[in-house]
Length: 366
Image 1: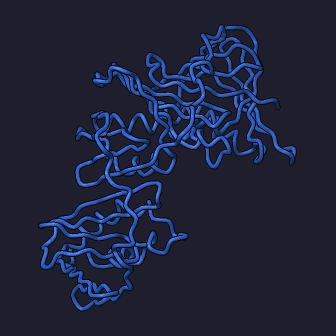
Image 2: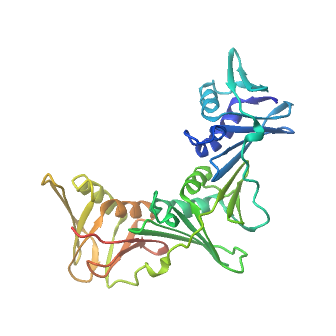
Image 3: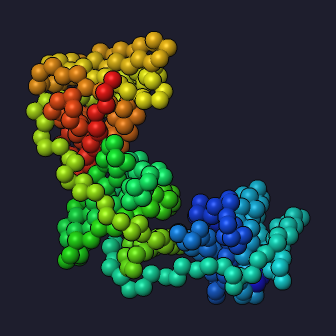
């Protein structure tokens, strides 16, 4: 293989894929990129056996071929080269040589035939939507995904596709985030899939929020996302997601309406003196008034007194302050609504006039 390529084009292709390559691998070849040339394109592939990512870059193809090179080393070399530099990349035997100006680097290669391939997703059901639409769905729910939970089906995001809507749902067992988009999907039968956490976070990096289209293909326990010059393929989590609709509280008789940024800042300040382990904040509600209180084992205390629109009688309830901050941070509105029933029932948070995104937070005893 022998190619000539611009540093910016190559770096962009490597950057799109580097996130899937683990630093420590049981198989040495998984620490490498697979680089192939076809016509005037270079295809860079990275995988951890659960997720596979491909990125393409325009090159001057002087001699076609396939080679694997150390992913992190190649990425760091390209990142360190001057902006706009020209790169010559050539492989011979078990070595790849990169030249740029007066710089020369020789990298150890492994056999390309040993590189594991997931293979493309066979014919499956297709969903097409805009970058911005998918990015919004993910951003508004991804923070509620569990991390390394023994309930493996929580370590990802539910993607639910109906005939007229698309939903994303995430929960870690203590809170739940849901966002939906009205869309004519073409799906006659609804479908639910659970996409792994790492795949969701990598996909989010690739979405630029514009009007370009991204195509999702679902088939045989895999999801494939095509985004112009990048393709992400991931195995799906084989499990049953909880019946999330049962978790969403019915309309509570106690209703708080307040300025989102005002409450968010007050929560951020009171969080400074909360218990670092439990992160609890007490909400004291009376007509027209919200008092936030925190304390910690050092007997330090914080209190914020806010004027809000609240009706429903006096209520005192505790929440994890980080969960409330995450929910308010995901909303895109000036005002928000919080519906409550009693001190033992979950709270429901959503934007005023826009219930397309909902957040359920379980209470905690303080």
